[in-house]
Image (cartoon, rainbow, N blue to C red; front, side, top):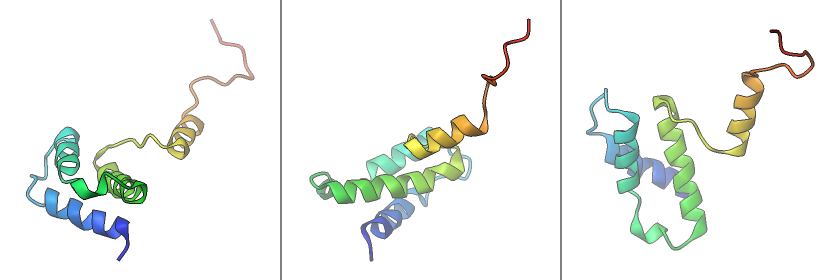
Length: 88
């Protein structure tokens, strides 16, 4: 089993008692409180935890702060087309 799979199991156990209408903030708090203390000292488990956390929270409205997600958001919803001057 990988670190990410272990993290997903811990997250699912920590959030199984949350009501279906729990807010994103409540879900974040529950997930963050479940982070194992022994994983703080090494980088790979922390990265796996953040990936599993993101996987869990995205369906509930979490917007990832990864570079890839920011690029997709910027490309998908351009506010202004820079090739045309603004219309008065």
